[in-house]
Amino acid sequence: MPLYEYLCRGCGLPFERYVRAWGDPVDCPACGGASVEKKVSSFAFTGAGGDGASAGGGCGCGRGACGCHH
Image 1 (cartoon, rainbow, N blue to C red):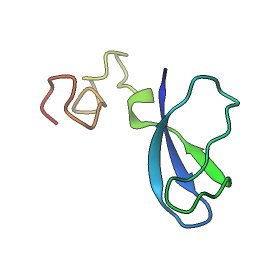
Image 2 (image 1 turned 120 degrees about the horizontal axis):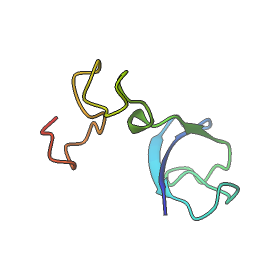
Image 3 (image 1 turned 135 degrees about the vertical axis):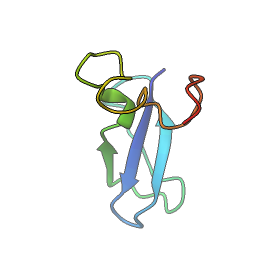
Image 4 (image 1 turned 90 degrees about the vertical axis):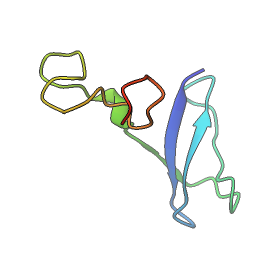
């Protein structure tokens, strides 16, 4: 299951959620609101070479889980 980033339009909480299918409904974990915006994840973008390490100064993971120590 892919992990997506969301922003609640009601309370402004940014959160992440594993979603099985693109159209699955997602509610805010804080306020329960259904008006959420799917954000573009930082790992979706890579450097000019396509390996993520070039032109961007890192792999793009932003969390260090890949071993790049960001």
